[in-house]
Length: 374
Ligand code: CP3
Image (cartoon, rainbow, N blue to C red; front, side):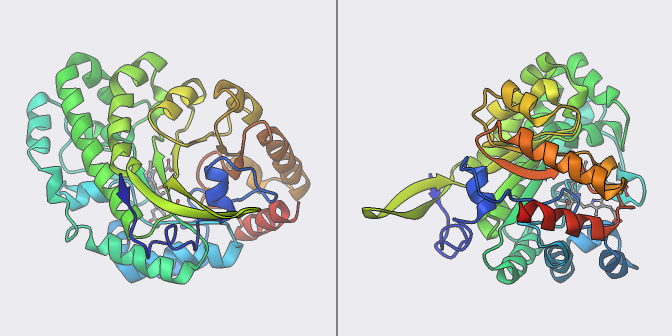
């Protein structure tokens, strides 16, 4: 076990009793906490203004800019957490991989990793080279952000090994990640080597954010929904466990005051695991070592909770498409999601995937007010 620094917001008690953190730890809150995936981004005019003339990955590596973009939606919407402004490919870029984000397209690799020789070349980069110095723009951005956030928690995040491998092998965005899934079966040894390397690189990125002050961590396996349960369990889950092992050992002492006075408890930094179209994988995604499971909009939360045995805190699952519907329609959908979320021990309201760029930010603000007023 590794204890967080006493100045960390969780260890110092600033965020430890916050409703988002407590919900992630399984304690139902009177007011349901809410934040939005992709809340820091293109739906905000103040974001678009700040980004003019700066490439996406350069913005992520500019600590003052990344911190300001992280804070924008917290100020505007009053959400219960900030999500660190960065990208899942940042640790690859910092490890020296030729990767960029092409506007309107997504991550694109200079040379795709298709063969066992390609895997050997990539994995010759030692993940241990991602040290404190390499991560300094990330650490600095997190520090600037938590100084402004006060008792509002910052969520750190990373891409899961499969979702990163889907980009590495394909060389860019793809529909069903067929080349990655082929490599998994055609050369299981090369695949396992690639996944283990990716797990350590992305795990180091997540750990750097938590050590620097993030109060929770979310692993995005956005494209895991293209996998069968068998392939997920056999060829992917072990690497996701390995990625999470980089933060699973991080603990802090939480003090809770009860009738007999004070009591301290050792707690771990809560970890959320999310994927798109992963209704069939929810239990397996919990079992890799997550505390909370994120659910997209394709199955209702009571069904998701049933699949998780009714014992796992859940996050989700507003359909992003409904954000642009008349308010009455959205309100009814939100109420339905909140009511179904009661089936789980605790619920954090979120979208089933990211905020669409065209979303009217006023709708998000109104949604947060509505959830907080119930
Ligand atoms: O607000 C937040 O959620 C925090 C920031 C964040 C970004 N990317 C910023 C970003 C987070 C958590 C991510 C994670 C991410 N990146 C994922 C997992 C989450 C998901 O959406 O499934 C994935 C798959 C990526 C890879 C990626 N990066 C894609 C597919 C894209 C979109 C390409 C496009 O332009 O449509 C990006 C670029 C990206 N990452 C943007 C933002 C704000 C848009 C780029 C821009 O504003 O110029």
